[in-house]
Amino acid sequence: MRMGVVSDSHKNLDNLKSAARKLIEEKVQAIIHLGDDYDDAKVLEEFPVEVVKIPGVFSTYYQDPQTPNRLVREFGGVKTLITHAPTPHKNDPPGELSPQELIDCERIKVILYGHTHVPEIKEKNGVLWVNPGHLQKEDKKGFPPSFVVVDFDKGKVTGRLVDLRQGKDLVKYQFSLTS
Image 1: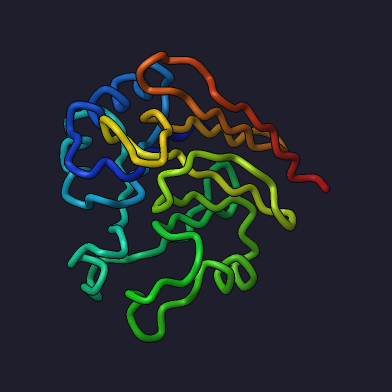
Image 2 (image 1 turned 120 degrees about the vertical axis):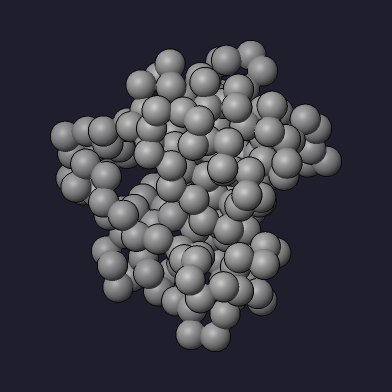
């Protein structure tokens, strides 16, 4: 099962559409938008894939009890947490479970998160942490716009961090689920 992951589009709809086109070429089954800005994800509905979206912590949707801020989904049998922020945030509604609480109680093996604008794929305490970076034209942290392709396949998860402009893999990481 192949998923596309984007985050922090911040109204840069041209970059978001460009990332979506590249993800469709990669034959993803869904595109996951990790917030900032929640309404940006509406443009993804133009594409022939499932769209999964959550709001960023500063969005008005984040305080709306009808809109989930964090989702736990299974992809290829792998429990995955979808969240904007990787840690508790001061804007979390009362009673909101923190990412770490969800990792612990749900036996999460993969966490997809944004918020920091810092692209990375790393393993920490038996969990694969994946941040696709951002889709802004320029970012003060100096990272280019990027997205991630995640493959869930037969006891492993592979994440590829892709530079949007150059189309080159920045990082490729394979995570074994059988450890």
